[in-house]
Length: 285
Ligand code: MN
Image 1: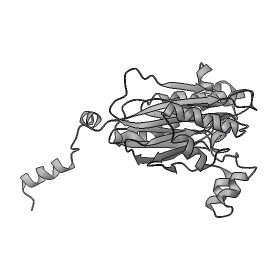
Image 2 (image 1 turned 90 degrees about the vertical axis):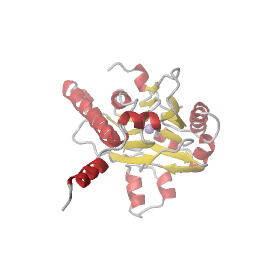
Image 3 (image 1 turned 180 degrees about the horizontal axis):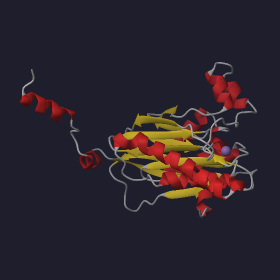
Image 4 (image 1 turned 60 degrees about the horizontal axis):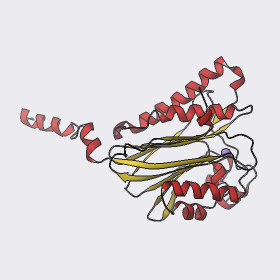
């Protein structure tokens, strides 16, 4: 039989030991981020949108005729951008899931009002840094997130493409997938039609980590070795400039968009303002 003092001790053990404010000030990391988006050498319009903030970085690659890809990627980025700020680690995954769901619902509402928007869609890959040195990732489509740590590149997302599903099933090799003419065919997107089936994951952040989120206009034309090389040099702003220039030199026929962020200790400097690039820059939704 348990005596009362023991029960009280158990209760204390089950209580969270640290209040959120203590966690936020005690182990705070922020992102020093930079973004660039280029229409590229073939397309006449840029359907990519991206955001680089001090807690959130995100890329959305829109699809759909008549500039509706611009609408889709802009909706995704503006919705997710509202999360940029202090998010408690334990709420990270729910917060990201709710925001991606909200973007999808916002698109559904727009389609009801303007039926011509039906058929628009967008990829979305967003990384959110939270208290407790956690990094949440929400991902749908074929934009990609990578982490560079101690010189080693790791892809944090899995493409929702036909060719990736064939690679995962052991039907074709990664080399064959990279050369497959169907490689840009995505199986999932945010499109405002029904539920959005996005991936959610959480990683531990280490100060000094560098993160890249990019559209397929980059990952399609640069090898992992080339991405590692360009990503390793200089500041986050230097790295985005180098990656975008390299993708254009490599002859990307698509819009080219990169966001790079360094995980640094402490709160962001007050002078650093978030940046939005691509279609969302000119969007007034
Ligand atoms: Mn693209």
